[in-house]
Length: 294
Image 1 (tube, rainbow, N blue to C red):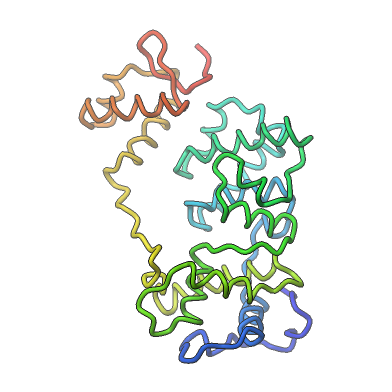
Image 2: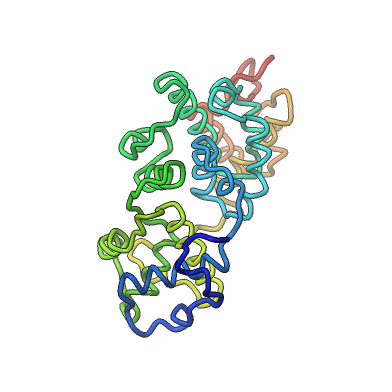
């Protein structure tokens, strides 16, 4: 994977990343990050094709799902909904069926809302301004910036978990707690403006390697939170309910309770929440995915 002409003769990853005992200068840091990407950068569908639609879909998918899972689900989603117009017109039951296995189903609805806005307000073309992108459903500052970088090669500044890991390991060795406010100026200074897209891919890939080889420096971040257990959580029950309803023609509450083996009060509360959020609707005592036929 050739990315940076001056690095073509370098084949070994830098020892620095195995034992960060001194802070590198910015040029040295850039060299080491790009060197690692030169030899070990990952190939992904949305890197081979940086069409703005592909980037939007992949970035929303990657918000709360591991790369390995997104790599599996992404092709099927693109096949079912190949562009903004198709996604904007997608019935919710069809959308959720394709989204199954990704979790955090709100993202699927947010994606469709984004597609509707792009087709209605922007002539089917995704804006390249991160401030505008941040006003889209399900897109905050970090995701808006990452879309601007990966879809349009804009030099935006943002932090995500892998980027944070690289900077904490590289510049904050021995520091017990690190705030993103301390990291962001370094991210801006280190930004490889000749090719922001490649630079951020390189940072993310290196962050993944660091987690596997030295542990997780992000534990020292003030923004670090350990994900709550999925088993037995409301989130898991929500997913199970949606899978039941996507697969069938509707179910009464008692049948859902029986299938799930959970307390009726808890299931009822989750059903009400899903209804309020627009996922499901109740007609003649039967719950269905919103927009599903009779």
